[in-house]
Length: 359
Image (tube, rainbow, N blue to C red; front, side, top):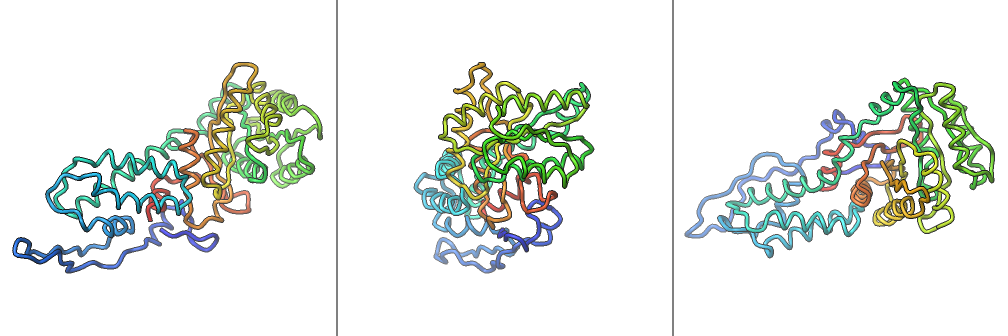
């Protein structure tokens, strides 16, 4: 399924997607080697989705009634790998998906072309679904309600590299929480980047939520701690903690982030990553995880809990960064930013993502 930046229907809206199904050409009267031993025609007259056409194109050489061999699958899976790479999936993940598919199919019996197509399609979709399925079991609203019942604020820390849209993503999450009936306090813990506090103040004024800030060149871990205490005293439901953007190889800044997380033990550590990053997402997430664990002096060994994918509206159908991020960290994608307004925040639809990856 093709996607565009601004004009196509919402990728994650099932109703809109139903209106915009892309159909393949009708395939009829397809002749398979009319010989003395094979005289029947194989007719395929139903409309098929693009993923079926993709697999059908590269499996015509499979003979009926035979066990699937590795050499039968190699050209097909090479095409699958190339397709995933074009969709911005990290190379290591594309190779893993193909390897899982190959291992699942070798030795299986196939009696006709259509059967093999269905087998390959099903195995690849299952492999992708296993990677992406974490988000479906994570209920953030339920967790926040449980904390509220105990009269303690639920705390979320936003982390990530420079320029990925952490503050904007945080503000979108704040708007989403407000729409679900929760009260919010935002803590300005980016004391490094000039203008960071002012940017958050503007967001807070527009959203009509309080901002806790202490200016610049202060200890961000202490600011977060004070903000959480204030939220507890004022009965605020959720504290959103903004942090400075930092490259994953910057040890002093990574050490400061580890200290903030270790000192305050937030309920959720969200990594904000760009939809455009592809292979870089694996390196970023693995090094953030490693730094949070290895630089922690309190022995809490905290890692990334969830992912926010920003700038999703800029990538057309190159949705592979989501697969890469989840595979690299094991953390679910909880939100997808897809526009400039506070309401442009969505939750992922796994089936639609898989459709796009295989289109």
